[in-house]
Length: 322
Image (cartoon, rainbow, N blue to C red; front, side):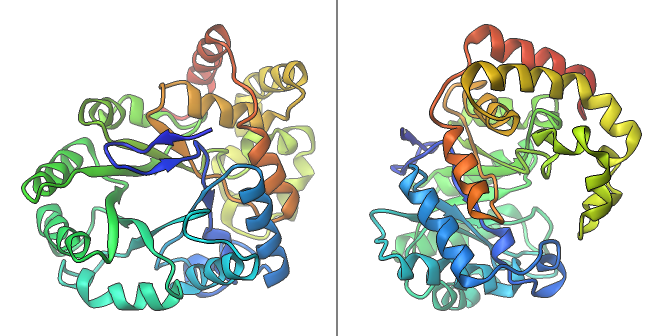
């Protein structure tokens, strides 16, 4: 199961693997997840590839490059090739200017141990330079063959237009915008981001597609699990008693559909994401255990029907973040 990502020539699985959790517990951002050992990371990557996932999303800020290294090590350990797996990573722009893009590309290549960068993304819209200046530098890297395609992350509709316009001046196109999107956070449907992506032919890459595990339903069925969380998730409003109660009707329906398809609530939630908007939306669930990777790939083996897609959209609008 493959689809073209945006206007690029990348033929990718609707689900990729988000690799934030490969940060080895390093740095402020990396501490969000417990450190994983190399054997588990290799197993997660192997299961993902075997199940049909053919791309992996990482970033400079994930452990200061530790996630990139861990991903490259895992791919090398299992004998994967660039034909088997595509790597997407991101440049961190905060407190930097656009000239940091060419100055740091060598470090990205070093951390990735020679793995080609299929998609290079600007991680945030906040920097000391304009999106146009950043895209001009990205275009130079693409023309030099150091990256294949250009994406952004967390960009507004207006910033997306600016980025695409700047790339068009170089004969290129904006491939993707990576944003937070799930059944419990559908703000991109109201703020113009999804509409603009469809208009421009830009892919949406949904991060936090399971709302950090909330859509699994396990916290609704056993609220005591929240107290055992090690990261800041436990303090999120969605994980509090009132938040769990508000989203329970959606979880109930996800569980009913999961029973119908021989799946899990998480798999149904992911299936909604990759089918509710044609082929525009890709998603990058993470996996901190091999069984999580097995869960991810199962989400691509069935398809909710049109009525079910619509029903989940209507139900989530009543209890999700808008």
